[in-house]
Length: 431
Image 1 (tube, rainbow, N blue to C red):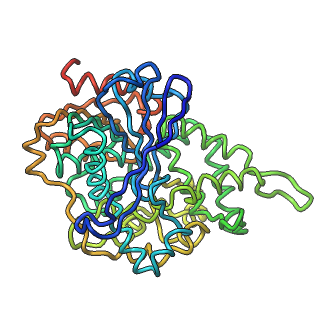
Image 2: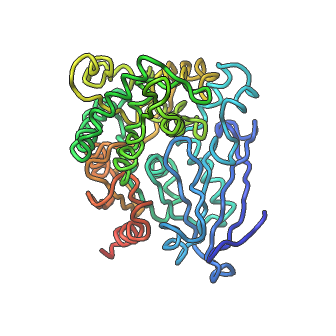
Image 3: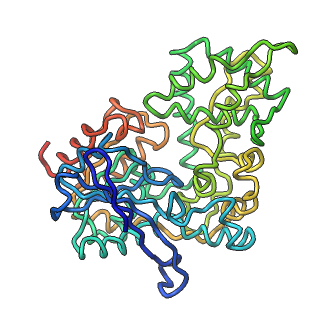
Protein backbone atom coordinates (compact mmCIF):
# COMPACT_ATOMS: atom_id res chain seq x y z
CA UNK A 1 0.00 0.00 0.00
CA UNK A 2 1.11 3.56 -0.64
CA UNK A 3 -0.44 6.68 0.90
CA UNK A 4 -0.33 10.29 -0.21
CA UNK A 5 -2.18 13.52 0.44
CA UNK A 6 -4.42 15.93 -1.38
CA UNK A 7 -6.05 18.99 0.20
CA UNK A 8 -8.05 17.77 3.17
CA UNK A 9 -7.75 14.05 2.41
CA UNK A 10 -5.35 11.14 2.82
CA UNK A 11 -5.46 8.63 -0.04
CA UNK A 12 -4.19 5.05 0.02
CA UNK A 13 -3.84 2.71 -2.95
CA UNK A 14 -5.21 -0.73 -2.11
CA UNK A 15 -5.01 -3.87 -4.21
CA UNK A 16 -6.92 -7.08 -3.64
CA UNK A 17 -6.72 -10.53 -5.18
CA UNK A 18 -10.04 -12.16 -6.10
CA UNK A 19 -11.04 -15.20 -8.17
CA UNK A 20 -11.87 -14.56 -11.79
CA UNK A 21 -14.70 -17.08 -11.39
CA UNK A 22 -16.10 -17.03 -7.86
CA UNK A 23 -17.62 -20.48 -8.40
CA UNK A 24 -14.04 -21.76 -8.70
CA UNK A 25 -12.23 -19.87 -5.90
CA UNK A 26 -9.09 -21.95 -6.28
CA UNK A 27 -8.74 -21.09 -9.97
CA UNK A 28 -7.36 -18.07 -11.77
CA UNK A 29 -7.03 -14.89 -9.71
CA UNK A 30 -7.24 -11.26 -10.84
CA UNK A 31 -6.27 -8.01 -9.12
CA UNK A 32 -8.88 -5.43 -8.11
CA UNK A 33 -7.92 -1.89 -7.15
CA UNK A 34 -9.56 0.54 -4.76
CA UNK A 35 -8.51 3.99 -3.57
CA UNK A 36 -9.13 4.57 0.12
CA UNK A 37 -10.00 8.14 1.08
CA UNK A 38 -10.18 9.51 4.62
CA UNK A 39 -10.40 13.05 5.93
CA UNK A 40 -6.92 14.24 6.88
CA UNK A 41 -8.20 15.32 10.28
CA UNK A 42 -9.60 11.83 10.98
CA UNK A 43 -6.97 9.61 9.37
CA UNK A 44 -6.06 7.90 12.64
CA UNK A 45 -9.62 7.14 13.73
CA UNK A 46 -11.67 3.97 13.44
CA UNK A 47 -14.40 4.94 11.01
CA UNK A 48 -17.18 2.99 9.28
CA UNK A 49 -16.56 2.15 5.63
CA UNK A 50 -18.48 3.32 2.57
CA UNK A 51 -17.76 1.66 -0.77
CA UNK A 52 -18.59 3.64 -3.91
CA UNK A 53 -19.70 1.77 -7.03
CA UNK A 54 -19.42 3.88 -10.18
CA UNK A 55 -21.88 3.95 -13.06
CA UNK A 56 -21.22 2.19 -16.32
CA UNK A 57 -20.60 -0.58 -16.92
CA UNK A 58 -16.99 -0.02 -17.83
CA UNK A 59 -15.98 3.09 -15.91
CA UNK A 60 -13.42 3.13 -13.13
CA UNK A 61 -14.29 5.07 -9.98
CA UNK A 62 -14.13 8.82 -10.40
CA UNK A 63 -10.72 10.36 -9.72
CA UNK A 64 -11.56 13.09 -7.22
CA UNK A 65 -9.23 15.93 -6.38
CA UNK A 66 -9.34 16.65 -2.68
CA UNK A 67 -12.82 16.67 -1.19
CA UNK A 68 -14.81 17.77 -4.24
CA UNK A 69 -18.41 16.83 -5.02
CA UNK A 70 -20.07 14.34 -2.66
CA UNK A 71 -16.81 12.98 -1.30
CA UNK A 72 -16.34 15.81 1.18
CA UNK A 73 -19.73 15.05 2.74
CA UNK A 74 -18.95 11.34 2.93
CA UNK A 75 -15.60 11.95 4.61
CA UNK A 76 -17.29 13.66 7.51
CA UNK A 77 -18.27 10.23 8.82
CA UNK A 78 -16.84 7.50 6.59
CA UNK A 79 -13.64 6.00 5.38
CA UNK A 80 -14.41 5.69 1.66
CA UNK A 81 -13.29 3.03 -0.81
CA UNK A 82 -13.48 4.25 -4.40
CA UNK A 83 -13.58 0.87 -6.13
CA UNK A 84 -12.51 0.28 -9.71
CA UNK A 85 -14.88 -2.55 -10.61
CA UNK A 86 -13.21 -5.50 -12.30
CA UNK A 87 -12.20 -4.73 -15.87
CA UNK A 88 -12.04 -0.96 -15.30
CA UNK A 89 -9.42 1.53 -14.19
CA UNK A 90 -6.60 -0.34 -12.47
CA UNK A 91 -8.63 -3.51 -11.86
CA UNK A 92 -7.56 -6.03 -14.51
CA UNK A 93 -8.45 -3.58 -17.30
CA UNK A 94 -10.19 -5.23 -20.24
CA UNK A 95 -9.70 -3.64 -23.66
CA UNK A 96 -8.43 -4.31 -27.19
CA UNK A 97 -4.84 -4.37 -25.89
CA UNK A 98 -5.32 -6.75 -22.96
CA UNK A 99 -8.07 -9.10 -24.09
CA UNK A 100 -5.94 -10.92 -26.72
CA UNK A 101 -3.99 -12.31 -23.76
CA UNK A 102 -7.05 -14.49 -23.14
CA UNK A 103 -6.95 -16.01 -26.62
CA UNK A 104 -9.43 -15.59 -29.45
CA UNK A 105 -12.95 -14.10 -29.43
CA UNK A 106 -14.53 -17.17 -27.80
CA UNK A 107 -12.07 -17.11 -24.91
CA UNK A 108 -12.47 -13.35 -24.57
CA UNK A 109 -16.26 -13.60 -24.41
CA UNK A 110 -16.12 -16.37 -21.82
CA UNK A 111 -13.73 -14.25 -19.76
CA UNK A 112 -15.95 -11.16 -19.95
CA UNK A 113 -18.99 -13.16 -18.84
CA UNK A 114 -17.43 -12.86 -15.36
CA UNK A 115 -17.51 -9.06 -15.36
CA UNK A 116 -21.14 -8.35 -14.51
CA UNK A 117 -22.70 -7.23 -11.24
CA UNK A 118 -22.86 -10.74 -9.75
CA UNK A 119 -19.06 -11.01 -9.85
CA UNK A 120 -18.57 -7.39 -8.76
CA UNK A 121 -20.65 -8.00 -5.63
CA UNK A 122 -18.66 -11.10 -4.73
CA UNK A 123 -15.49 -9.08 -5.16
CA UNK A 124 -16.93 -6.53 -2.74
CA UNK A 125 -17.68 -9.18 -0.16
CA UNK A 126 -14.11 -10.51 -0.19
CA UNK A 127 -12.76 -6.98 0.02
CA UNK A 128 -15.16 -6.07 2.86
CA UNK A 129 -13.93 -8.93 4.99
CA UNK A 130 -10.36 -7.71 4.59
CA UNK A 131 -11.12 -4.07 5.35
CA UNK A 132 -13.80 -4.14 8.03
CA UNK A 133 -12.97 -7.34 9.87
CA UNK A 134 -16.43 -8.62 8.98
CA UNK A 135 -18.49 -5.56 9.87
CA UNK A 136 -21.13 -4.57 7.30
CA UNK A 137 -20.52 -1.42 5.31
CA UNK A 138 -22.44 1.29 3.49
CA UNK A 139 -22.76 1.10 -0.29
CA UNK A 140 -23.26 4.13 -2.53
CA UNK A 141 -24.20 3.04 -6.05
CA UNK A 142 -24.48 5.48 -8.96
CA UNK A 143 -26.39 4.29 -12.06
CA UNK A 144 -24.95 0.83 -12.88
CA UNK A 145 -23.45 0.98 -9.41
CA UNK A 146 -27.04 1.00 -8.18
CA UNK A 147 -27.74 -2.10 -10.26
CA UNK A 148 -24.83 -3.69 -8.41
CA UNK A 149 -26.30 -2.54 -5.09
CA UNK A 150 -29.63 -4.25 -5.86
CA UNK A 151 -27.71 -7.40 -6.76
CA UNK A 152 -25.90 -7.01 -3.40
CA UNK A 153 -29.26 -6.87 -1.59
CA UNK A 154 -30.29 -10.03 -3.46
CA UNK A 155 -27.10 -12.01 -2.90
CA UNK A 156 -25.31 -10.84 0.26
CA UNK A 157 -27.43 -8.48 2.38
CA UNK A 158 -25.51 -9.56 5.47
CA UNK A 159 -22.61 -7.45 4.21
CA UNK A 160 -24.67 -4.26 4.11
CA UNK A 161 -25.27 -1.71 6.84
CA UNK A 162 -27.19 0.67 4.56
CA UNK A 163 -27.54 1.23 0.82
CA UNK A 164 -27.71 4.53 -1.06
CA UNK A 165 -28.69 4.45 -4.74
CA UNK A 166 -28.62 7.35 -7.18
CA UNK A 167 -30.32 6.88 -10.54
CA UNK A 168 -29.71 3.15 -10.43
CA UNK A 169 -32.78 1.05 -9.65
CA UNK A 170 -32.96 -1.59 -12.40
CA UNK A 171 -35.97 -3.50 -13.56
CA UNK A 172 -35.85 -6.87 -11.85
CA UNK A 173 -37.07 -8.88 -14.83
CA UNK A 174 -37.08 -6.77 -18.01
CA UNK A 175 -35.32 -8.15 -21.07
CA UNK A 176 -32.99 -5.81 -22.94
CA UNK A 177 -35.70 -5.43 -25.60
CA UNK A 178 -38.05 -4.01 -22.97
CA UNK A 179 -35.36 -1.65 -21.70
CA UNK A 180 -34.78 -0.10 -25.14
CA UNK A 181 -38.43 -0.12 -26.11
CA UNK A 182 -38.97 2.19 -23.15
CA UNK A 183 -35.76 4.13 -23.78
CA UNK A 184 -36.33 5.43 -27.31
CA UNK A 185 -39.42 7.52 -26.43
CA UNK A 186 -37.52 9.02 -23.47
CA UNK A 187 -34.62 9.89 -25.74
CA UNK A 188 -36.99 11.46 -28.26
CA UNK A 189 -38.43 13.67 -25.53
CA UNK A 190 -34.94 14.80 -24.53
CA UNK A 191 -34.11 15.64 -28.15
CA UNK A 192 -37.35 17.60 -28.50
CA UNK A 193 -36.50 19.55 -25.35
CA UNK A 194 -33.02 20.29 -26.71
CA UNK A 195 -34.34 21.55 -30.04
CA UNK A 196 -36.93 23.67 -28.22
CA UNK A 197 -34.11 25.24 -26.21
CA UNK A 198 -31.78 25.62 -29.20
CA UNK A 199 -33.94 25.71 -32.36
CA UNK A 200 -30.94 26.73 -34.47
CA UNK A 201 -29.49 23.27 -33.80
CA UNK A 202 -32.17 21.61 -35.95
CA UNK A 203 -30.61 22.83 -39.20
CA UNK A 204 -27.08 22.48 -37.87
CA UNK A 205 -27.68 18.82 -37.05
CA UNK A 206 -29.20 18.19 -40.48
CA UNK A 207 -26.25 19.86 -42.19
CA UNK A 208 -23.73 17.85 -40.16
CA UNK A 209 -25.50 14.54 -40.77
CA UNK A 210 -25.74 15.28 -44.51
CA UNK A 211 -22.03 16.13 -44.71
CA UNK A 212 -21.08 12.95 -42.85
CA UNK A 213 -23.31 10.85 -45.07
CA UNK A 214 -21.64 12.23 -48.19
CA UNK A 215 -18.00 12.44 -47.10
CA UNK A 216 -17.52 9.83 -44.32
CA UNK A 217 -14.41 11.52 -42.88
CA UNK A 218 -12.04 9.90 -40.39
CA UNK A 219 -10.44 11.39 -37.30
CA UNK A 220 -7.49 9.47 -35.83
CA UNK A 221 -8.82 6.27 -37.40
CA UNK A 222 -12.36 6.81 -36.11
CA UNK A 223 -14.91 6.80 -38.93
CA UNK A 224 -17.34 9.68 -38.49
CA UNK A 225 -20.82 8.65 -39.62
CA UNK A 226 -24.34 10.02 -39.31
CA UNK A 227 -25.17 7.26 -36.83
CA UNK A 228 -22.10 8.09 -34.78
CA UNK A 229 -23.10 11.75 -34.82
CA UNK A 230 -26.58 10.82 -33.58
CA UNK A 231 -25.02 8.94 -30.66
CA UNK A 232 -23.84 12.28 -29.24
CA UNK A 233 -27.34 12.45 -27.81
CA UNK A 234 -25.96 10.52 -24.86
CA UNK A 235 -25.01 13.96 -23.54
CA UNK A 236 -28.67 14.90 -23.20
CA UNK A 237 -29.14 12.76 -20.12
CA UNK A 238 -26.86 14.89 -17.95
CA UNK A 239 -27.53 18.20 -16.26
CA UNK A 240 -25.42 20.31 -18.59
CA UNK A 241 -25.50 17.97 -21.57
CA UNK A 242 -27.88 19.95 -23.76
CA UNK A 243 -25.66 23.01 -23.46
CA UNK A 244 -22.53 20.95 -24.17
CA UNK A 245 -24.14 19.52 -27.29
CA UNK A 246 -25.14 22.99 -28.48
CA UNK A 247 -21.61 24.33 -28.08
CA UNK A 248 -20.24 21.29 -29.90
CA UNK A 249 -22.53 21.94 -32.89
CA UNK A 250 -22.04 25.68 -33.17
CA UNK A 251 -18.56 25.53 -34.74
CA UNK A 252 -19.10 22.48 -36.92
CA UNK A 253 -18.23 24.12 -40.25
CA UNK A 254 -15.45 26.33 -41.59
CA UNK A 255 -14.85 27.98 -44.98
CA UNK A 256 -11.77 26.68 -46.76
CA UNK A 257 -10.20 27.15 -50.22
CA UNK A 258 -12.10 24.00 -51.19
CA UNK A 259 -15.45 25.20 -49.92
CA UNK A 260 -17.28 24.60 -46.66
CA UNK A 261 -15.91 21.68 -44.68
CA UNK A 262 -16.47 20.06 -41.33
CA UNK A 263 -14.01 21.72 -38.98
CA UNK A 264 -11.10 19.89 -37.41
CA UNK A 265 -12.35 21.23 -34.09
CA UNK A 266 -15.73 19.57 -34.50
CA UNK A 267 -14.29 16.33 -35.86
CA UNK A 268 -11.96 16.01 -32.91
CA UNK A 269 -14.73 16.84 -30.44
CA UNK A 270 -17.05 14.30 -32.05
CA UNK A 271 -14.37 11.62 -32.09
CA UNK A 272 -13.56 12.23 -28.43
CA UNK A 273 -17.21 12.16 -27.39
CA UNK A 274 -18.03 9.07 -29.44
CA UNK A 275 -14.90 7.01 -28.71
CA UNK A 276 -14.98 4.03 -26.35
CA UNK A 277 -11.20 3.96 -25.96
CA UNK A 278 -11.47 4.92 -22.30
CA UNK A 279 -14.35 2.57 -21.46
CA UNK A 280 -14.64 -0.32 -23.95
CA UNK A 281 -16.50 -2.53 -21.46
CA UNK A 282 -19.39 -0.11 -21.72
CA UNK A 283 -19.84 -1.17 -25.34
CA UNK A 284 -19.06 -4.85 -24.78
CA UNK A 285 -21.26 -5.44 -21.74
CA UNK A 286 -23.91 -2.74 -21.89
CA UNK A 287 -26.67 -5.07 -23.02
CA UNK A 288 -25.25 -8.02 -21.09
CA UNK A 289 -26.03 -6.29 -17.79
CA UNK A 290 -29.69 -6.98 -18.60
CA UNK A 291 -29.12 -10.63 -19.53
CA UNK A 292 -30.92 -13.12 -17.29
CA UNK A 293 -31.67 -16.69 -18.26
CA UNK A 294 -31.59 -18.34 -21.66
CA UNK A 295 -32.71 -15.48 -23.92
CA UNK A 296 -29.91 -13.70 -25.81
CA UNK A 297 -29.77 -9.91 -25.82
CA UNK A 298 -28.97 -10.12 -29.55
CA UNK A 299 -28.21 -6.42 -30.19
CA UNK A 300 -31.48 -5.32 -28.61
CA UNK A 301 -30.96 -1.58 -29.12
CA UNK A 302 -30.34 -2.09 -32.84
CA UNK A 303 -33.33 -4.37 -33.36
CA UNK A 304 -35.73 -2.27 -31.31
CA UNK A 305 -34.67 0.90 -33.11
CA UNK A 306 -36.42 -0.49 -36.16
CA UNK A 307 -39.70 0.07 -34.30
CA UNK A 308 -38.91 3.80 -34.16
CA UNK A 309 -38.23 4.84 -37.79
CA UNK A 310 -38.07 8.51 -36.80
CA UNK A 311 -34.53 7.82 -35.55
CA UNK A 312 -33.29 6.88 -39.02
CA UNK A 313 -31.02 9.72 -40.19
CA UNK A 314 -31.26 8.87 -43.89
CA UNK A 315 -35.06 9.06 -43.77
CA UNK A 316 -34.93 12.38 -41.92
CA UNK A 317 -32.55 13.85 -44.50
CA UNK A 318 -34.80 12.81 -47.39
CA UNK A 319 -37.60 14.84 -45.82
CA UNK A 320 -37.57 18.04 -43.85
CA UNK A 321 -37.82 16.62 -40.32
CA UNK A 322 -35.18 16.91 -37.61
CA UNK A 323 -32.33 14.44 -37.24
CA UNK A 324 -32.96 12.77 -33.89
CA UNK A 325 -30.07 12.01 -31.61
CA UNK A 326 -29.90 8.65 -29.90
CA UNK A 327 -28.54 8.02 -26.43
CA UNK A 328 -27.41 5.16 -24.27
CA UNK A 329 -27.60 2.54 -27.01
CA UNK A 330 -24.92 0.24 -28.39
CA UNK A 331 -25.08 -0.99 -32.00
CA UNK A 332 -23.02 -3.40 -34.13
CA UNK A 333 -21.69 -0.47 -36.19
CA UNK A 334 -19.90 0.86 -33.10
CA UNK A 335 -17.49 -2.04 -33.56
CA UNK A 336 -16.88 -1.07 -37.19
CA UNK A 337 -16.21 2.67 -36.81
CA UNK A 338 -14.28 2.86 -33.53
CA UNK A 339 -10.65 1.67 -33.62
CA UNK A 340 -10.83 0.92 -29.89
CA UNK A 341 -13.63 -1.57 -30.55
CA UNK A 342 -12.88 -2.85 -34.05
CA UNK A 343 -10.67 -5.77 -32.91
CA UNK A 344 -13.41 -6.85 -30.49
CA UNK A 345 -16.25 -7.14 -33.01
CA UNK A 346 -16.47 -10.93 -32.93
CA UNK A 347 -16.19 -10.98 -29.13
CA UNK A 348 -19.13 -8.57 -28.94
CA UNK A 349 -21.15 -10.77 -31.26
CA UNK A 350 -20.56 -13.81 -29.07
CA UNK A 351 -21.65 -11.90 -25.99
CA UNK A 352 -24.77 -10.70 -27.80
CA UNK A 353 -25.72 -14.30 -28.66
CA UNK A 354 -24.94 -15.76 -25.21
CA UNK A 355 -27.85 -17.68 -23.64
CA UNK A 356 -26.52 -18.76 -20.23
CA UNK A 357 -26.69 -15.57 -18.17
CA UNK A 358 -27.30 -16.15 -14.45
CA UNK A 359 -30.36 -14.53 -12.90
CA UNK A 360 -29.23 -11.40 -11.05
CA UNK A 361 -32.07 -10.49 -8.71
CA UNK A 362 -34.03 -12.43 -6.09
CA UNK A 363 -37.54 -10.94 -5.74
CA UNK A 364 -38.36 -13.01 -2.66
CA UNK A 365 -35.26 -11.92 -0.82
CA UNK A 366 -35.79 -8.31 -1.82
CA UNK A 367 -39.40 -8.47 -0.60
CA UNK A 368 -38.07 -9.59 2.80
CA UNK A 369 -35.25 -7.03 2.88
CA UNK A 370 -34.21 -5.64 6.29
CA UNK A 371 -31.29 -3.45 5.12
CA UNK A 372 -32.08 0.29 5.19
CA UNK A 373 -32.16 1.51 1.57
CA UNK A 374 -32.74 4.94 0.06
CA UNK A 375 -32.80 5.77 -3.64
CA UNK A 376 -32.81 8.98 -5.65
CA UNK A 377 -35.06 8.49 -8.68
CA UNK A 378 -34.78 11.21 -11.30
CA UNK A 379 -37.99 12.16 -13.07
CA UNK A 380 -37.54 11.68 -16.83
CA UNK A 381 -34.13 10.05 -16.36
CA UNK A 382 -32.91 9.36 -19.92
CA UNK A 383 -30.74 6.39 -18.97
CA UNK A 384 -32.82 4.48 -16.41
CA UNK A 385 -36.57 4.22 -16.81
CA UNK A 386 -38.38 6.02 -14.00
CA UNK A 387 -41.40 3.71 -14.07
CA UNK A 388 -39.17 0.63 -13.84
CA UNK A 389 -37.23 2.24 -11.00
CA UNK A 390 -40.39 2.91 -9.01
CA UNK A 391 -41.68 -0.63 -9.57
CA UNK A 392 -38.41 -1.98 -8.25
CA UNK A 393 -38.51 0.43 -5.32
CA UNK A 394 -41.92 -0.93 -4.34
CA UNK A 395 -40.57 -4.50 -4.59
CA UNK A 396 -37.74 -3.90 -2.10
CA UNK A 397 -39.07 -3.94 1.45
CA UNK A 398 -38.43 -0.72 3.32
CA UNK A 399 -36.81 1.17 0.44
CA UNK A 400 -37.42 4.92 0.63
CA UNK A 401 -37.38 6.99 -2.55
CA UNK A 402 -36.63 10.60 -3.30
CA UNK A 403 -38.23 11.32 -6.67
CA UNK A 404 -36.97 14.62 -8.04
CA UNK A 405 -36.70 16.63 -11.24
CA UNK A 406 -34.13 18.94 -9.70
CA UNK A 407 -31.31 16.86 -11.14
CA UNK A 408 -30.66 14.71 -14.19
CA UNK A 409 -29.05 11.27 -14.09
CA UNK A 410 -25.73 12.67 -12.88
CA UNK A 411 -27.35 14.26 -9.83
CA UNK A 412 -24.88 12.75 -7.38
CA UNK A 413 -22.16 14.67 -9.20
CA UNK A 414 -24.09 17.86 -9.85
CA UNK A 415 -25.81 17.93 -6.47
CA UNK A 416 -22.86 16.55 -4.56
CA UNK A 417 -23.18 16.91 -0.79
CA UNK A 418 -26.89 17.80 -0.90
CA UNK A 419 -27.85 14.58 -2.70
CA UNK A 420 -25.81 12.41 -0.35
CA UNK A 421 -27.16 14.28 2.68
CA UNK A 422 -30.73 13.69 1.53
CA UNK A 423 -30.19 9.97 1.00
CA UNK A 424 -28.48 9.54 4.35
CA UNK A 425 -31.41 11.30 6.04
CA UNK A 426 -33.88 9.02 4.26
CA UNK A 427 -32.02 5.82 4.99
CA UNK A 428 -31.75 6.75 8.67
CA UNK A 429 -35.36 7.87 8.84
CA UNK A 430 -34.38 11.41 9.72
CA UNK A 431 -36.22 13.15 6.87
